[in-house]
Image 1: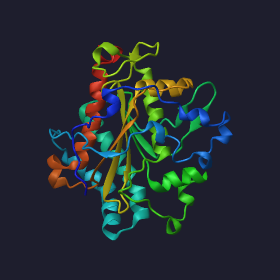
Image 2: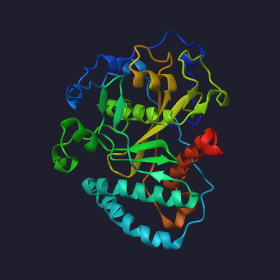
Image 3: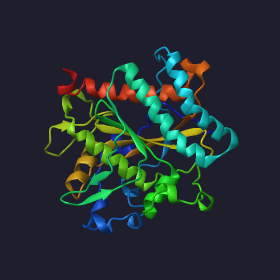
Image 4: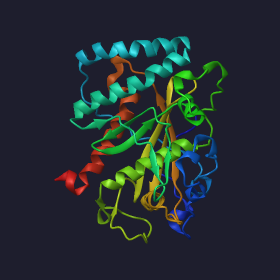
Length: 315
């Protein structure tokens, strides 16, 4: 397993902003019917994307005390997944992982008294009437209105590209991608940019953010998580369905905004992408040290911190 750092690495375009990057989405055609899964080249976004690096997700270690009654019920959801992981039944495990993820997030939302939605945005706005329907998200997590993560799996992505239902796929003829691949799937990245566009509806004053570069666009608000970037995550299972792979994107607000408006130029900073992994294992006797819940707790913390600096949510 690769060593995962928790400190964000520095990039040359952080220190020495250059000329704005060109908007690669302008190369796509203007009719939605022609922006289909088979005409989305994997290298479409390579010019605006930094290479994938390993970085540790934030974990929350002070989780609330577990409730026995909750776990008595939760075992009904967990037992089929545990059995599928034990026997290596990948098809069965894929059916249960999103349910366990949603169930876990719903319970944490109740504990933390936060609003949670699993609705996903699958429209990437490209200016004017031009849209990209990504359709690669199985479920998602939106905390207090802020899109935090989307969950998918390689089968769901492949089905989206083929324009068929995931249940109609033949798992026996499917080649699972390499878990250690340094390639970020273009469908995932497009969906993440659409999430960054969603958070633009929440206006966070720029003076509350320690920006590291100059913004030349005319709008006065920014959706924030890291130095003027929107931080969003893609989750998908490993090939044995025993670990979750998390790809975090830090998307410059100017890039999300320019893509939304169809501008020819984006921010001079490329999108940063990082990877971490954590166990899909929930043991009732190890509640306080359970990595699965610690990472999900970090997602809730991210939503809370955004809400605190958003004027009409923090009052």
